[in-house]
Length: 345
Image (tube, rainbow, N blue to C red; front, top):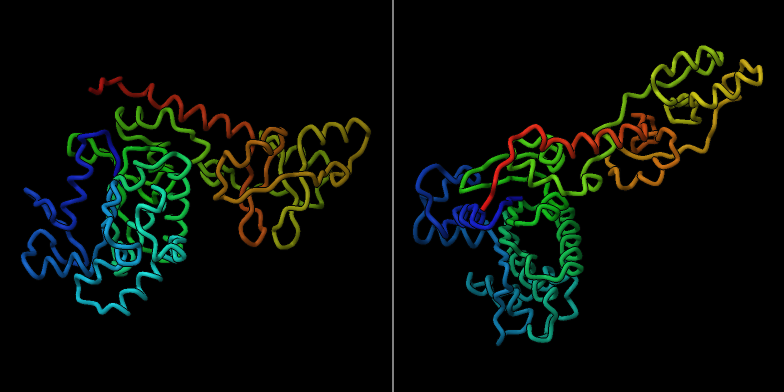
């Protein structure tokens, strides 16, 4: 995912990857091949076989139906009609447009036309997809649907996708790694979480300051190491074991959480004269995974109780305290204060 303000060099950088633009220095390496050294037939073969490109504007042929638009690149390669139609139908099925194969582009909505453009890029089964502001011309709802479809396709095909956008929310939502550019230079490359929580410069910090951090930051980023209580502990021993946490969990022999012990429940049990730790355990606790975003645990955090973070086997791997969620959100919001403010024209 490459992003930056208009004029920052995003599209120029993208076009050096398939040598639509020539670079003035450096190398563009794909599987050990320096693309910028290719000429003539080898360059054309490289573009046909290695890369597919999806543009901001759909660039469909109005006089060809959907299936012929999708298979056009294969036609240029000399693939016979039956084989390219078969490949086109497979690509259309990936984007949910197989029933529209014989339609004219003008009969489709904007979002459907963009999906045809994506199918065309997928039809030749390229190793790399280059997507230049591919969704920016779409309405917000359709744009989000296209993002969802792209992520589903990526989960199935596992392609290398170089995606250009000026929308930070889009970059953080669908990018595995995000590159921030400014004035033709790369300012920072990192995961969405790193870009949001560890901005390298004031420019990046200002970029991310208005982003909904809860959609990006995951529980695994701020959870504490689990500190399960021993079932043989007395109430006073368990209270001491909790320490400065608001609570901790009891687990079974497989490490799965079975109960939550909070300081408040310990105090209430002690006030009744009880010394039995198990009498203070509660089982109405919430769970999350390390990949759960903070937005998805807001409702649970509103109860004020620690949340058990579990792995795919249900084993306790972390404790998430609601106060730590607020502390992290506040920390990220204040990151810009550590940089000198800049003016961007």
